[in-house]
Image (cartoon, rainbow, N blue to C red):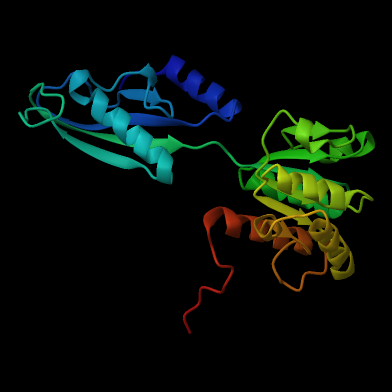
Length: 261
């Protein structure tokens, strides 16, 4: 079995940078093949090989094309390649057969949480547990309460000046500018903007959004009161209901019970 010290270091670096990539691994070889069992390579979103080796011209194009396809749906693929076929696109009969699995490693979604208190603490813990990139904007005094957060912002939040994109944004503690910040996040295209709020406060924010010209599409991305209806009472339950809603949106679920009887 070949060693892949440099390859594993590159994988770790790509993950740390939240850069998507695909890993191709030779899982079966019969007969003659330049790629050997266990050989690995890393491909970027354009299908360009970053590092590693799974075979020569006989397989490179096939694996690169499958890597691109895997990014589209996030699903791994097994490619069975007949290296002795005259009809193969590469037109190079190498002899033998091989199988390669291509596994996409997509970038983790970014969860930005604004606020302090037990609900935001549990939200950060759950987000980290579920492999989201957790960013927290809170006071300097509260920063140590978020050990799993990738980044902690202790300055006033200006969402259009962040150096990272945001997929999910939760306003977890009451601020006087929650309405303004929500509108700006929606206008920037954040896919999910949620406010932990009473129905009264929710109504006030929605009225503000409409008054400022928020589109129907933007209002569809606004979620308040945040979370699914779990009749949550404790802070931990409230955080769970919000993360459940985020997972539902991320996976395209319905939130309905799965039982059939």
